[in-house]
Image 1 (cartoon, rainbow, N blue to C red):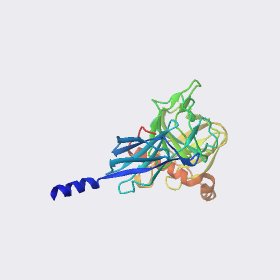
Image 2: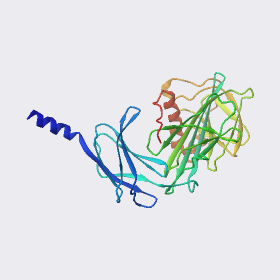
Image 3: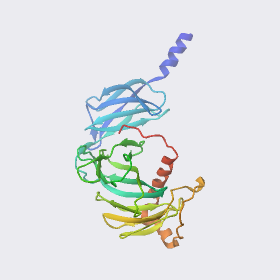
Image 4: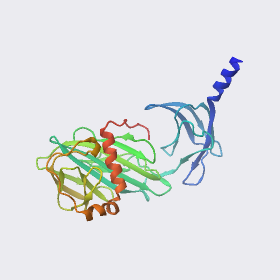
Length: 323
């Protein structure tokens, strides 16, 4: 009897992980797709089993499914994932893939934020660039990169690049120098939906206290953000409001190039942290600008951007290496 109970208990831990790989570009099942089941343990991914879909795009994997798992398929050189959370269904799953194109098509940058934090003789820069792809093709160009950015020549070390697609976890990529001076390319597929690039780098504060930048993408808008205690001045930028939680000041960039003089010193801080900006304080922004910030700026994105910076600063887990 005890042996029978043990057999039944062990059998209950095993279940079929089954479903269908669907090509959303063609809106039909994808035969011959390679599907791998991974067991997730902390930051590690342990492969469990790999199968191919049949002529109807269906797959079935007999495996132990305790704890979080990840289904992954590589199609057209792009990795597509689906999480399997503990206690969730393991059958009737749909794993979506898309055809790819080296042309961006309708994919474009919809938001670009640059946070400037002068502190201790150094300038800390965080850039967040968001792509929206409303189409049914993945934009993928490994040779040229899907995003090109201009970075100052005086940056210390390599910039950190974390990319988040959809509801996935941030993954790391390298910013690779190109033949053009100070221009870097980033290779990451822009799948249908939203993809966010977060760049972090540090440089010595210029003697002129002037920070210059170039916008290489064709989207927009582009906005500069300064923490409490810091003001920015320059041609082609306009102060448009203040973020209510951190009291960071937001500036609109008019052209494709900008140069701003930085006055004061400080770092981004949340009210509960008890940290304050250093340097001379900024003046209170008129209520009409504060009230207009949400429709002008897209307040939700700004709050998410600043929240990401604060979370990273507190020691958030490192990004994964898989797409």
